[in-house]
Length: 326
Length: 299
Figure 1: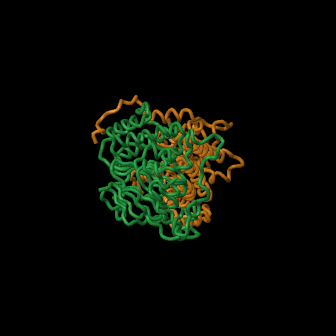
Figure 2: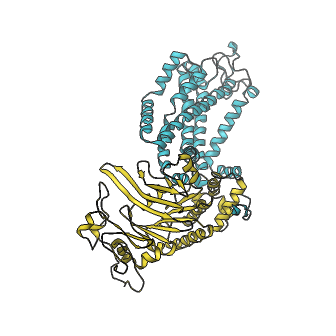
Figure 3: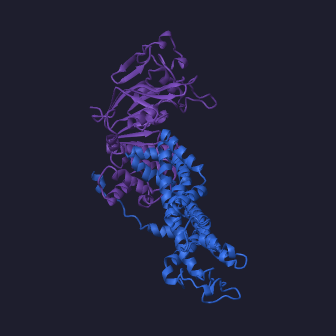
């Protein structure tokens, strides 16, 4: 049985101009120890999807799903109490902004211990040992000294390591990282990603990595889901999707990656013309059609999901077979 | 949880919480000045039965309006002179300090609790709750404190308990406004979402994420309101509707002295000066406390 089962998850947000269909029918499942990367541009609903799993959506947002199951526990019917017991304990989250995700009023040690003592009956000393152990695991030197420091005394990279350590305090089964490296500078990004991947392998956790950086996906993920305008347009194993992207949007994304050697200096970088459609009100057919080079009449109707391989799926009217792409 | 048992290197001993607080406090002059003066006044007030040279209530009509020691006819027996009934002014001043401090502290405890609770609830839950509480706050802001206090005093009669209660129930508005605004900011902070993500309940979030982060402005408000309450008590007593004679209160002393101020000005300047010093000390302390407790200062 999969660790996480999501079937037809939708998120609607009421706005002044109508219902915003932020996420429309996203389905995926995740096995223990696997990493799923969700990629997409800003506003494609990838962050909301990850928040929906933790039930941390903004208050106005309406979450619906056919199935939302974590390790056999139905998240849709779970009580607040059950959800509080899961959060931080069995599913943890790493946020995008390490600079503001730590409480400035307490030492990081205090906050790390809190994450463990909230869920486990352990002594202060045991929590402290665990925190220092994990701080060292995340590559923080002089962890025992850092333990007693306040967030403002740490740099962004250190704070993100602290956030990662905090997420690991209870040894969760699932870790959701929402653009964990976006706010960091490039040299630190690679370190943090390697760290996440190593820790994930070491502790055997499943991970959902939300990102808009395809380079990150290639380095870290097993599975990838490409989101566009609130829908998963393509899912599959990373190597397959990168080697033979099926959906025109995915192909476009791959075309945007500058490759040393192939992309010449001075030449314009690849881009996908057009903009994400307005997602307020009913949307029929393929959301990408207005930016798609292969737009046909059928794009306005129902879009079938095609299986290119056992676990490589694409939502497109075109009968895409392997090799027809690019 | 095998990793739990694996131990990390022992940390070097950090100075205790108190030691760190003391070091920061010593480096903040306004805090030290405010705390010093306040401690002195507090000590005098607490030790009143021991150190006051005379009984503050003992009248001696033969020794009325003796001027303080620095004037020509001053006497070492009454350092700050006597009032119109021949009561020792220094003793009354020392005992009166108890009243002022009692009123300041208890008023702030009552109003601070009410105001902070309302403000945090409004700011944290927002929506309709916020609308209702904001309406209550605006209603309260529309009430003139002195007038309401006067009306209450006229209805129930002035007494120490009445003054504390009326001021406590009236002076919560600034707490509520400040707490609400601060909570609005904090509730949207990422670390509140992060706290939810580690499974904290709403109650926990309010008490351990929101409250500690809005405490700084509230401390400043508390000191301002304490000074405000002490001045209001003086005003009410001056108007004859606060603390009732013969209880020694600084406001009452000024009030009782007003007919003698032209020929014996010290009956007003002495209690007036200590009142100013007390209020100044409280404000200095509040100002310094903000600097001392600000999280950026902790290290």
